[in-house]
Structures are given as structure tokens and as C-alpha cells.
Image (cartoon, rainbow, N blue to C red):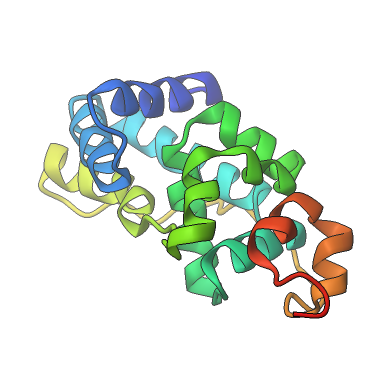
Length: 178
């Protein structure tokens, strides 16, 4: 499976009707389970690469602002939700995390307090493999390295948030003096 194939499967799952993240994940499981086990393994490798590429401090900061705080696991699940938004949104968010402020659901969340996570999207290859083979997904012999994040900034520092993520800060951080 190539990167384009990975994202085409995600796009097919998104096009299946409704944009609810868990529904996208369920459709992705069904689509992937219909493929050969080797393709499911390929999907797994591409998902690991996508997650490694998105393991970035400023994206974590964006997720922290949007969700009102976020743990390690929460950041992982946030990126699962981000995958359900499709390749274009995902790539733009990785390159420019502040671009998430342009998404209608994120803008709405600034008023409603909705949080974004989709652990089920991260489990797609395991569920699909089990469904296709009645066996557990084999462990990856060559796991993708995850970058070490040592340059965290204080996500609770409103001034720093405004400097690094101005559009998101405008939505999620109290204005100065309030």
C-alpha cells in the first residue's frame, strides 16, 4: 500500500455518508478488511508514519487549546480525529497547526466546548486484520520512530499561545485583562 492508497481509503470511508469520526473509522475497518492481509499491514505502516509525522509540539499545543487541555493519550486520539478529516486537512494542520482555526467544527467548539478525539480511527488496522483473518495483527518488525519532543512550550501561557497560534488563541484563550 502506498501513501496515496492509505489516504484514498480514508477518503472512501469519509464519503460513505456522515462525517462522524467513529462512523468514518467503522467504514475504514470494513473497507480495509475487504483487502488482502498484506495490504492491511501496509495500511498499518502508513498510519504509523502519518502519526509520527504529526507528533509535533505546535500541533500538540493546538490540540491542547482546542480540547481545553490534553494528555499524551489525548493527543494521540486527537490525531485519530484529525485523520478522519482527510489528507488535505491533516497535512495542512501538521504544516500549520493554526490552520485548524479555519475548520467549522473547531470554530463551533470554541463556543460549545466540544472536544475532538477518535481512538477508534487508530484501531482501524487491528480491527480490520482481526475481521479479515480471525487473527491478531502481527507486531511490526520495523516500527516507525516517533520524534522526541523536548521543545515544549507552556500551553497554559496565554501570551505564548497568542504568539505561536494566533488564530486558535483568538478562539480559545481569554483576551488580556479579562
